[in-house]
Image (cartoon, rainbow, N blue to C red; front, side):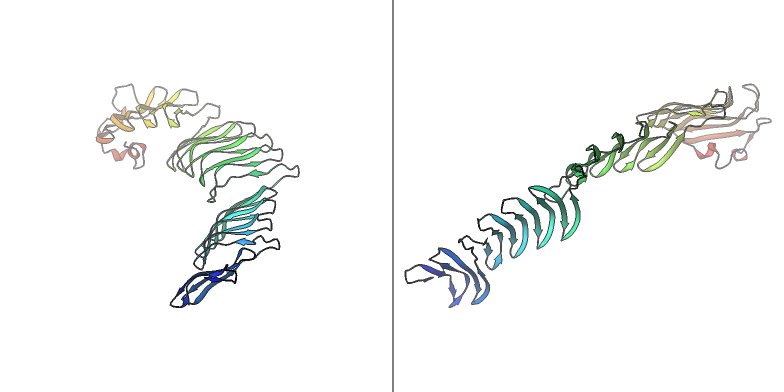
Length: 398
């Protein structure tokens, strides 16, 4: 250490082999303040930092060092000792919290650095109110939000960010009247919960979408402006699943059946020229369930299908005309089971020769035996003589 004539320390540090080594600090004993911070490596000056002061004696900044590296929180101050800038360093590089304030202690901006690069959430404010957010990744903006206002001073939108830059909680956009335009929700940057879109004239909901873990999951709905349904469906972790229903503006309905993103079946109401419905479906819990009926133009039943929880079950029957069966058979747990019989059209009375076209037996969906007959004399023939490869009889052997 070095002392002045009055015995006060004016400089202190250490030597190694007669060479300055490590931290050396200079003092002004009259003003009772530190004047410089120096760091030496075996006589070689690695850093010389000189403290600066306002005319009133207050420091302009409060540095922090580890050896010759900036390390920890550095504060640049107003002359009243309030913080103007706070910068965090880690061994010479900006790393961590950065803040800027007005002399009135109003926040101007706050953000984070990683290895000298802007990172995560940066918040900008004016008059103690946030005016925008920016989200950075290695100095590049990847997200952000600017607060904007209508001429009537009503806010156009609201947003919430976590300090790491991830979107969080509910986000809103508003119509000029102050009513909700859209509502969205995030959990740690991931889409979650129910999202809404509203009509700009009635302010009623036009679209409702559910999310889980950033994927569409759950009910999905759309409405017409008169609040009648347009679409009702379901997503299973980002994929359309089960029954989707669609309505046109006249209220006519059609259906799509999805299985984990793959379109499995469709159904649309169809009518004869006289207005008679051609087929009547039955659904429950977004799956085919119950009996489906098909009709002739006069309203008589032309066929019956049955489902249970999306699977084919029970007796299935088709008719050529009233009381004249085209085929009949049993489904069990979505598979053909037992005898299935196909009949010729315009046949005689039940039991007469020439009625049966084909007799097939199934066991749990597996074809066990099959016989086909001539119409004229019921002589057994090769089934391929009367059925094509794409015929319903061959195309569906479940």
